[in-house]
Image (cartoon, rainbow, N blue to C red; front, side, top):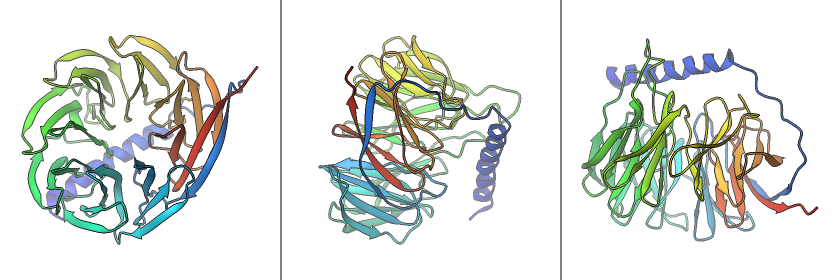
Length: 381
């Protein structure tokens, strides 16, 4: 590790420590409110894939199967309807990012910057190396697997064998969040990624060339901690636009062809976005779940009764918005007005990543490694 690498790591850890200190001295987690359930939740199946450690893992769905990983190196495949385990492989690495998909490949990354690609039968296809730990899921198409490393570099690897095709280095401010900002493919030739300093970039997946960039937010404040304005969650690409939210900054939507701004408004979030119908959803830094008009950014509703509960990024699912919290509770909110509709508890471990849709169920992965498929049924009367 070079001196520059050591300094960068210290900066990241300093940011995390400072934010944790702020959180510990902040408001106490809100107590769960009582409400009359309007739907019944049921755990259709449950299983485990291994502890997430200090990393964030989100399961992926492909051809009726769920793929999930844990930091101890296990990667597993489960039948989506029943949760039956189909196979498990020991990658031999401390995993730190995944699970990603690309051209029939199952993709994960390690704390040492190793990228691994498996086929749906659990056979290792190739392994490659990037410059530092992989904190988010790699994504790929028929030609290129795009991987992001913790030092704000983006790599294009050949899908066939993992050989390096290109590298892109983004400029970063002196202090950043230790986060796992993912990337989103747009068609066959572009990938969208958010960066520290509020930058939203679109790269050509074939060459790594910058197609366009914009500043969702501009860092402001009297010190470096106040000036953190990172895009720490997964950008949202839907229809003709791309949207992103920053920590201590703004949320905004842009045309995905050229990056022309459609609307922006103040916001602070380190999470990902979700859209359902004409409404965009995100979780504020304080735990509030917020709904905005997709077209204009105007406020629709705000649910503020989960304050300081370390609420996950939301998922729009049918008539509901689904979030998890630090005690392993899963909350179903009404998409219409944000009211509580139903609640269920998992294993008591924090739910830090966005839920996933599997057919007519919601899939949750807890930081303890628990996988829970949850079904919902509307109550009559």
